[in-house]
Amino acid sequence: MSTQDLLPYGLGIPDLVEYQPGYKVDVEIAPFLNKLTSAVAEAGFALRLESAYRPFEKQLSIWNRKARGELPLLSAEGVPMDRPQDEEELMYAILTWSALPGASRHHLGTDLDVVDGNACPEGYEVQLTPEECEGMFAPFHHFLTECFDSDSAFGFNRVFVPGRGKIRPEGWHIAHLPTSRRRLEHFSLGTLRKIYEGSDMACKKVVLARLDKLAEEYIYPYFI
Figure 1 (cartoon, rainbow, N blue to C red):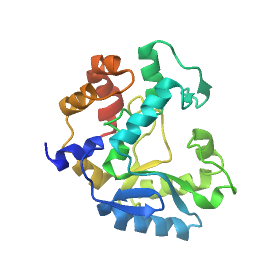
Figure 2: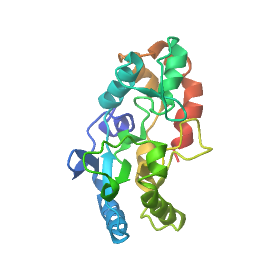
Figure 3: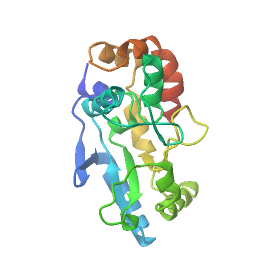
């Protein structure tokens, strides 16, 4: 399998550029991100990345640490919850806020988690929660919504919105859709299954048993 074929799963060797310290994006989206950053700045905000490209191993680490209880699990309301003992319940609890490894849009290099750097109090650790979107970052997200609605966001838009699939809405997650659509042309559920079979993924048995249904509810609705 070619490097290009592996890119949608967070594998292979993508063509990345460091856009902000510690955060890399697909080199093709950088000019469009520059334009969006400038538009945001003109409106008095500072577009700050909290996540960008994420390889398979990093997404797998997040998944496994949540499964082991090393990272907090959040309910659909964004409230910390107890770790389910049943493996299937645990899988669905993780899926509430975290994508399946190999099926995260962050693997594409086209998707970003963004906040308003100007609104962050000194020393504040961003959590990426609905409360932040509706609170300190509300003006910033309202401005982004206006840009998306008027088709003036240079190809960027939100993906995790109400009524689309079963992942909770994520107002902070934006994607450069023209580029991501090209990356997703190479995605295959069969290839993802083979990747899982050779991995040390937590809840692997139940994920493989439910993969077709998981794809319908947690993967394909967001391949827009």
